Amino acid sequence: MKKSIVVFALCMFLAASGSAIAKDWKKVRVGVEGAYPPFSYVQPDGELAGFDIDIARALVAAMGADVTLVAQDWDGMIPALMAKKYDAIIASMSITDERKKKVSFSKKYYRTPAKFIAKKGSVSDFSKGTMKGKTIGVQRATIHDQYLTDVYGKDVNIKRYGSLDEAYLDLIVGRVDMLLADSVALLDGFLKKDDGKDYEFVGPDLNDRKWFGDGLGIAIRKQDKDLEELFNKAIETIRANGVYKAIQDKYFDFDVYGD
Image 1: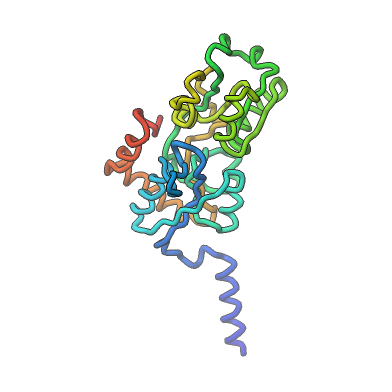
Image 2 (image 1 turned 135 degrees about the vertical axis):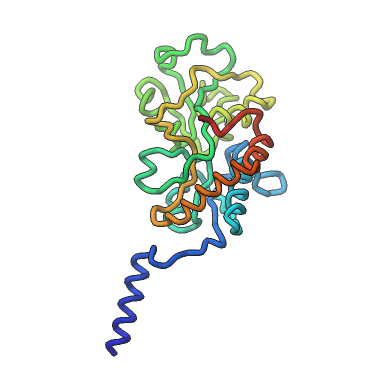
């Protein structure tokens, strides 16, 4: 009887501690968005593609593990990670102090600035004064949303969207005057396309650490330190063996890794 009590108590302790039982990470489930080209998008055949998607597959392969991609709307990314719907997030998520309160991050796997876009010729002198009264679109619950709210929230009308594709449609029909998002996402997802030919970047590159963090990283639950280290080593591996550059060159004609 006493032995059973001891065994039961030990099992309860191990279950509570979590980290006491090592996980082999032979299979890694990765949360991705699928609505943020060129980083992630759904092809006509229904398959996921994009820079984040290829990076996710390459990193998990470098670990010697199998990957399962789990599509998730942006708003629910971190809650779904905490609920163990997947083991990590690879979805162009910026490494910010606010997010670090909830999750851990790998080292960055790329870094690009944020920018505004507007119709060509509509913003001749970019300043806080000229922004006053404008309606600006942004993807909901992003660092861009936070920046816009903090810096321009009292002077502009903010319209928030579940995805950039929705925001592009409203920009085209004139429901918003400008959009704010990652510069590469705006360039490849809109400006390079026919619908974007009448639009341009306005204002400076935005990369203040207070809002835009330390680059884009892989979010992991705080207790999964071993998985965080595996991702860090995998980033180093694909950077060194040429796999990262091959993926980068597939989507971009510049160094997306950044400073």
